[in-house]
Length: 232
Image (tube, rainbow, N blue to C red; front, side):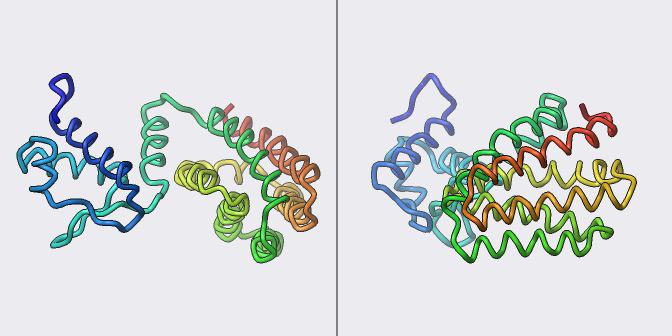
């Protein structure tokens, strides 16, 4: 039933969410029709559609023309928009994101060393090798740097880490070239990519303590270019 203390569409959204949880729907499972939802919530079809569009924008459901709405697969879209809006409106800054990344990725490295599959360890190493082989090609390094950290997150076997890291990709794509330009010599740039190989080796060895030390080293070394760029 509708709650008079909240907007109609939000009350209907809550009814839909309650239905998903009560019936333990899985990604891809269909929701009731608009008319059925309207009957459940005591709302007009216009309000139901507004609620469905709101849930779709939050990536909770998927809607396609001519098909019933269904439960969406988890992705980082909603969190990424939240973070980018925070950066754009100066409510979040790059040093704060860097601090969160350092905290989260320390745990990621620890878990990845313990839980990674052989295929994931090989993929992590491959990205690091490509970065080292192409350290003077920033577009290649950036592509595989992003993929390296996302692969680390996936190796934890915890999808929440993948969502968090994926949500930061747009911000990192924006700031990465700035910090790269602050590394003015080939020696500095090669060192910045070689640390990824050290992290990858620790993951492959299944050594969580070493993995944590290496990723901490990576973030400590990033502080200098961040400072030079004026971001800290």
